[in-house]
Image 1 (cartoon, rainbow, N blue to C red):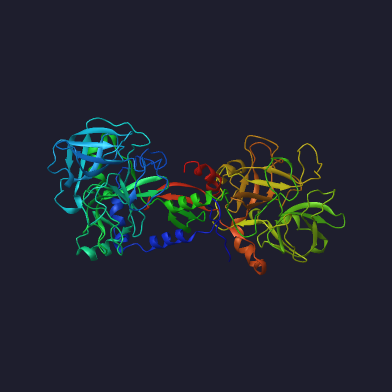
Image 2: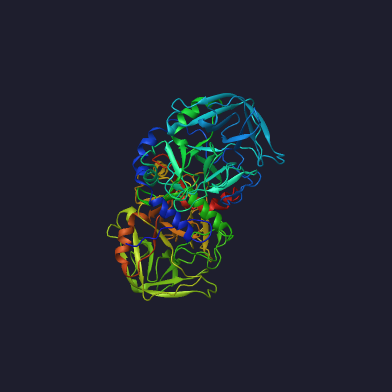
Length: 629
């Protein structure tokens, strides 16, 4: 059995080397991160009050790129707080703005410091800061267990609320259960010393990239003192690129999509980045309850990390899972190419299908799998079918039930029944295979083997078939095509291929109309409150198709309509996905493409599903997503 998985991203499907490296690092996370996952899920409580799509936290408009170990640009880290003492006004620590009233920092910064002053929107300690806001501190809340290394935190309540600007915004905080695996790209910012050879503090805010180091490796360096409350980051084989003296309280942040999430608060490092010794941070996600308890009147944004994007086949099989941040990075890279693509081999492609117009003439090549089934000796069109590979056509058993195979002619690439069809080819039929249970309404399918293979062109291509487990939810936009009658009032048949959009109707709703006769082997489509838009006489065998990205997938084979689209009576189709084994069994020498109708789900890093939607919807909204980057 051959399956093709569709993976929708903006641009080319190929993951670049850098992205693959990130994925490999994710797969090679430390054992501690894997074994402690369940414990962290238990801590989540009911704190998912801040949507990752709508929250103001973590947005840094002027942060266009990261340059490790150099000056930061104005507004690139808008949550950075500069902590001073009123005795001399000098800078001595950093912190992060987490909402309009509170700053998070290290408890070591405030243990014996009265009259604390906070500067926000500051870039330079001695130069001009036109976007700066100043506040004093009215309350210091030390963690009740601050004497232990992993709880070395403090909250500072500002004298008055700040006004958010492009230069002053709160950071998002990593929610309980967040997992930052070894290698996660992270950044630390502060005004601490930039060299181990001198104590001089820089005038301009510094930024440096520090990847997360697994707890196992970090414990090897620090003799086993790294608990679940700590997180390590830095370069094991490089020196200098690390926070140092004056950087206590500095935030360790990671980007997820367009949002920055704080994973740690800097508390110390061995000789400021000596090779082999990562920097130590208090793990923010382990202190969500404590932070929320004191800031509940204006709670910060807690964001799970990583949000997991999971691609399922429409059933219970998970085809692919990866961090949402990786998906965003791929989308951003692809945006530069200026196109959105969902690519899949050759099936289901209709390059000449530029738009759909319900209930009107189709254009040449717009439905290149459409087959016109004609009977001899009259040569008249009697039914439709769909080309599923170079040798086989799928149709309804009714179309071939009382006709000898030798009396059937198949036309492909045909648009008009009586006019010129310059791209048309014809084949006689070598064999007709009826479904073994064709007498039952819901298995009334037939396979027609062509006398010889066809050559694919822009006007003649196979459709993709919905794989087992595919789910077409109510309302899924679908189309049916054929040369059947266009009006219930007359028996006249159109000369030109007709196309009409018909949304899927749920089996539950359809059964209300057809008194429980709709089984899992059937799928319904049509308009419940409108008449006229439906397949009719001589449309038997016509394909019901749905677009997924740039690929068309056949979900059904038309077998019946009550009075050709009578209001309240959906059209009935045999569900293709329920007959995958039978189709594949007879077409194995040139097997059709069987494509799942994947469901994309966004998880919070654990078992909680935040959002689910069909992949086809993701393909259609990618251009909208790009607007937010």
